[in-house]
Image (cartoon, rainbow, N blue to C red; front, side):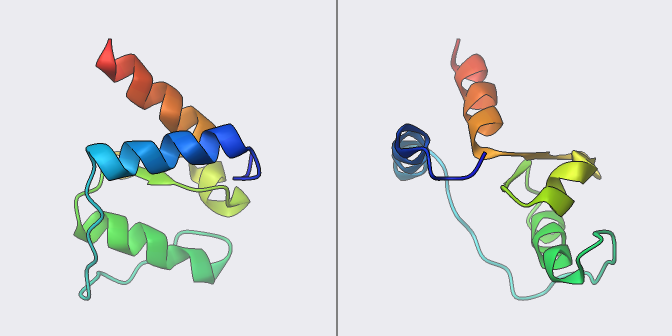
Length: 87
């Protein structure tokens, strides 16, 4: 599921505007976990920032499902998790 679904795009944008922070890190631990080496940077950043989730439509990341306790979800599944926490 990509972000071609307009409703999912709107929900994600509303969610990030309202209650979540986006943080960037310059120093990351170098790892090699994903079949596509260009994707490792997302894991590195998530680890450096103690992230709970990586939200992605990338097949290589999604195949991991979880890395060091960081859940890797597509946008729709991420929204379901967040909605279930609000109940």
